[in-house]
Image (tube, rainbow, N blue to C red):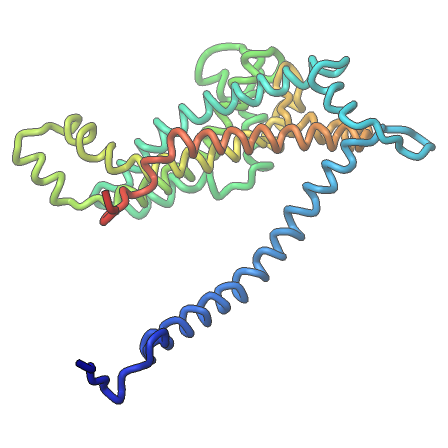
Length: 315
């Protein structure tokens, strides 16, 4: 018995007009997406890719004065990691890690406290917010000079504390001077990012916890902190990447003396002051790799809370 076929039905193997329209539209959107992305990719390749490639290329050549550079492969890297200059590299890495850990710890605590204060509703909140953000708006060079004056032996810090500490003349006081100045400068930035996260938390959750009898500390620990974690992790990641390449503040404040030389200062010292472009390029490449690995590990092990759980995923 034959089966009747509707005259308007498409033949076997042919797509319907609606399906064809959707496929044509998706291809057009994909093409438009490429047109929009390619200029940005080319710009990033020119701004980031070329300097990185050039630094890696220069790091493979020797530093010679009056002669053409010679290809030495990984010689500059061996010099920095295990050679006669390894002491300076590992010391700078230790100082950079020290600044990163202590500065981040202080900034997280102080910045979160600032954000909680700025989030509360009270008279004069706008003035308080503006006052808290003033240190972040001051250029880093001015911040360094300001703190260098304040930390003089006869400066206001020793006057207020009743001590005669040589803040920029001995190792640990000089390191703490950099940490304090950096925390004062950048804690408001972290507070601003945390404040944005606080404003996304519904007030109904706090009200419900208050009705259930939870105190201020319990509400912060059980409601605010878990919901604030994604914004806090983003803020910490930004500051971690920033402090790992810190240069201008310790350079102006201490000049790198008394155990305050960071990796970025070591790179500039080798490349600019000593005109060792090959060795300086190797140091800059190592610094880039360290920052890249730290950021990758941070996102890999702590960044899972930044991504929402997938919904509608098939089991």
